[in-house]
Image (tube, rainbow, N blue to C red; front, side, top):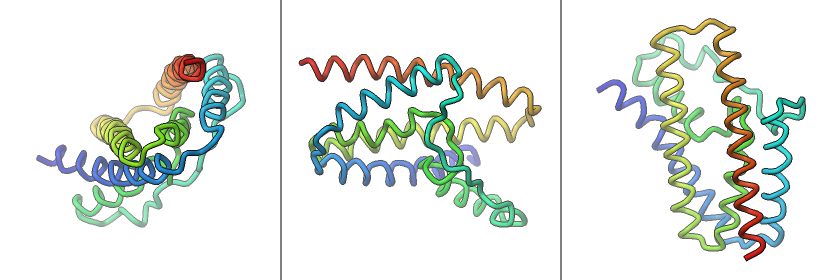
Length: 173
């Protein structure tokens, strides 16, 4: 039951946040969003796949320990979920995160943008909660976290290059 509550605490805010962003960006019809998204996916895909020092935009803020220490488990879950669930207020070193708003701008439809954003929020919230629950269950060593991060950056880069190919296909159709 605790695991379900923890996942809900992450997923709920993520769905709401990205669904709202999708609604706003989907209805805005940005000119040039496709080109920007393609360039972004290509540049950061190459950088992450080949482990270049060119890093994705990121916020290097972490949840202050004083916000969660000595609080009940349920309140800790809500605090972590509100901040980490959407993925934009804390460290998120993977460039695919910032392809989400660009992709939402491509929908050209507020309702489709909201639905797409909600699905992206669901995926991110579940992924973030799963990773944190895994780390809470068994405290990984620093070197293990570094190796995991390197593996995920490689996967992130591959996903970005696939997205760049798909975006190029959209641009030619």
